[in-house]
Image: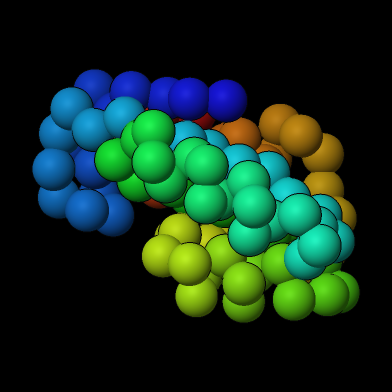
Length: 91
């Protein structure tokens, strides 16, 4: 899912960036390849690590993504809400 930050992005302080919002749950085997491709196409990537018990979040951070972590696996609504709020959007 792609989201254009229309407001001032509270994370990066810049408006008008194309940001990819990526939900992930126990995706350590795939997250690096997905982020490699995404980082070529967008300005920023925000990964919502939705309660993973593997290294999903750590790998995403090492690749340059901002990671929002949930302590447990949650509903899709919460995943998108927490990442869009980080990007300065309403929820």
